[in-house]
Image 1 (cartoon, rainbow, N blue to C red):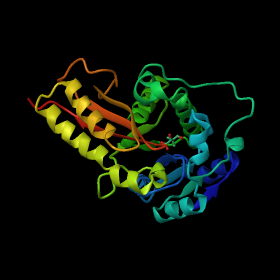
Image 2 (cartoon, rainbow, N blue to C red):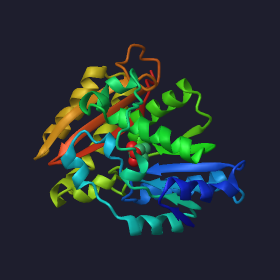
Image 3 (spheres, rainbow, N blue to C red):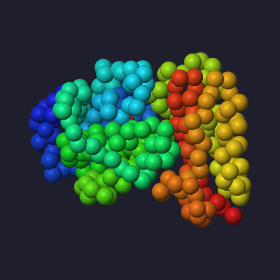
Length: 283
Ligand code: PAF
């Protein structure tokens, strides 16, 4: 495995595999089993001939809250070991100064899917994600890239960016990886208090119950209210949103025959957790 700390080192590391399949897994580090699963899927997709590239970069531009950025775990040595164990060929690990020019003045903004859910609560977040991912696409020039569906809105926005800008890469959405008790794996989970870690699987239970109710015809508002009341009843939890939206355009459901998404964001103490479930009516 080669580790590139600069753009020049990255270009040199990738030069021998140009023309082959290159599968990119962008991450912000603090790698856990969810990331490992993305990396293993990338290895499988790339095959023996292709190349798996991972980026480990805590992107300051996508944080709307300085405290959240400062508290984000950073474990570079362990991250490199996870990459090695998962068969990654090239890891790109730049600093913010390597990644961004100090007088950068170009932005990358998606203006429809970003106005709802997390985008409505975290101003500038998705513009920061689109900026860094478009830079990574330009630097790595991958044939494929893999993103987890826990960040469902992020994946939808990146698909739109790739479509609207004709970026020559195929995006793959990977299923959410969960702990045995159902909590979606996240780098933020290590910051949960023991009480909140014990309570957090309620998110998954509430979503599964809601999906069953929706399948059987429960009204959209009732489905959301049930999840809201379960989560709000937990000590120290503040629900940011519970929304049932169209799975493609992420705006409120207008046609219930179409696939839908129930998405949740909630603060367990200071720690913001997100999760979602794809839904459909069966009747
Ligand atoms: O999902 C993440 O970890 C980040 O938003 C990403 C895609 C690596 C961009 O910084």
